[in-house]
Length: 510
Image: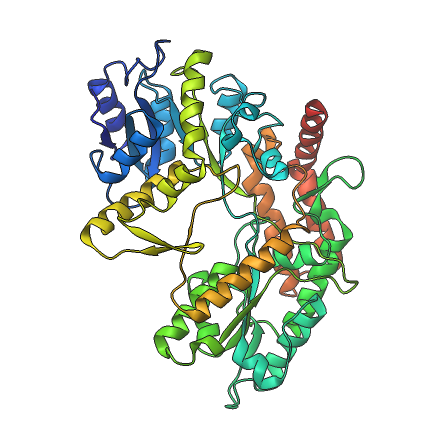
């Protein structure tokens, strides 16, 4: 029988052999037997080096809270997707399987009946009922709910600026895209550091992929480009075929040609993105708000007395006509899915969902995301403050793993970690405020729910056509006619088949 802590590693073949050698029909109730479930079996990715102690304080507290023992198989994240394939083909499938994303394998298995369709079931469980309908629809597979999505921040976009440079030049924080262009010009031409050194405005690294909330995606969205797809013409069509895409990239190219963007934007290692900002070579970064806090920490390490004067942030920018188009994230990262092979009856499904519903209550969220109050953290207003002790360290290590089991699709209600100082707290409060305001203007992808088979097969190749064409245009290697011709090549290289499939799926879901 599996121990209550199973850490799988090595090759898929070795793992399959180990599974076959050690399985004995599953946890309490017998996975797939139809008997009542008295031990909840879960498989989840492990992002740290050490799996939680199955006899440890946190797992014991979680078991007591849901009223049921847990048998959790923790799998190293690097081999998790391979392990999912192996386990789903075995005779010992857990009751709950963490799916880390809407992969082709998961989508195909779900549509074929491998997982419970929860579309009409989740409304009976208040803590599993999604708070945001847009995110829920995007997380669905062709409009059907085959798992409880794991909520992530739906809005993360931010511009991080050198506050000391703004102050030195008497500039206000940007509100519009034109404001940003003017600040980028000033940072590049007016010696904001006051030392005569060479500086630039916007710092952009070599960016891989398309539609992954990168700097170019942000700039395009702020100028009114739809989020990956649009239904403004009645049918779904790609956003990069809209006129706003070209208009946005035209203005970005103008900034590049004027020297207001780092010259090595096409080759700069993204792993060194912070360095020009921190070293006084660039003053603007369009990314996620956590980068601003990260940079603030670097300045604090250098000078704890003045670091609060170095960094500020704003959220999504308005177009020059005052309209705001804010770029959201997908709002989720994978699912807790329930395989029908291990949970064949509605009575068993109710047992599983009742436990997961408890875990998504406020108290459950606190356990999974914060730990045990009084052991590894204390509460200070809206924040959790870490306790320093060996016992607290053990529990906190387990929290890092158990947080992978949290869904929070009903809204995050656990405590946030208390920032490390007044400057951090002020910047954290500021970003939370603009994220909340920006969410009201979020431009969600209307096609996020749909899974095109052609895109599953050829999406990476098709996306690269857009990435390469955009980069060549920005670098001056293509003119506008050349950019348009390359984007049309996307359509003739299989993209039209994707468009047709997406619209067919959209019509079927209505």
